[in-house]
Amino acid sequence: MVSTASYSFNSVDPKLEQLESVSNLVRHEFRTPLTSLQSVLKLLQHESYGYATANADELIKIAILATDRLTRLADALEEEPGLLHSMVSLQEMKSLQLRNSLSDGLKNEEFFLCFQPVFSVEENQIVGFEALSRWQHPTRGLVSPGNFIAIAETTGFIHELGLNLFQQACKTLYSWQQQLDTSRSLTMSINVSSVQLADPQFSNRIEATLNHHKISPDSLIFEITESGLINNLESALTTIHKLKGLGISLHLDDFGTGYSSLSRLQDFPFDAIKIDRSFVIQRNWNISKAILLLADSLQVNVIAEGIVTYEQFQCL
Image (tube, rainbow, N blue to C red; front, side, top):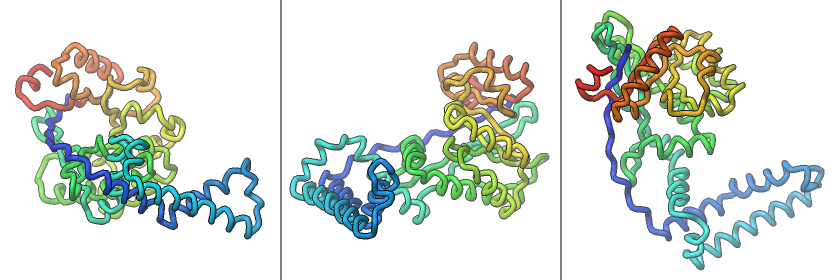
């Protein structure tokens, strides 16, 4: 059995910026020519609107109409800032602010990785690390992945962000492997989104990055949540088999907290399943024992996440 120790990062949720600043942000987005053009293009893609065969003059009229509507809305928000508050919830405003900051955050190198060790009980030593993404926002402070990953997935930004973080992990792993004298090569575990698994080019990008940073595929572990298996199941399975073909190990993360059936464990070529930290924190050793027995019958390894005390270690 392999267990992991974890570290918590506490950050105070900053106050929401003035409503006026949010309104300025919205108006800026509405006035951006690209936003207007994207809106027009979305209209043109729908055959039901009858615009697919429109001539140049008609297309210009549509563009003018779309821009005019956006301008009117922006002007209305400028004249009555309180209107936005009635249209958008505080949580939506926060999400809008984060969404607008994602690209700049990546350009300014605000995203970084923290690492928690993976300790082997059998070998009595650290055998690898799990990379955890964090965002050091210039005004909101430390932002946890629970607050920005979902937004990145919805916008499609997860592809660019995920590749950047993966490159950081590979660079760090190569450096540690060269510096540390261990009896075995260190591994790096990285969380993968279901959106990334749905990308048919994902495995190709991973292979290219591994070659660039001189990382052996058997040093890499991708962690996939149960919810990640439910979404885009067919395409995810195709990508997973490609990753396994490269020599990358696969772990099922947060086991027991999702909605997948036990048969899913046989459908996917997992090398290990992870006992969710909630079972460790709540001292639910019966479920932990059941997972261990199940893993033993399936001949896969087990990782217990969230061990921070010697008592927890002894119980497991």
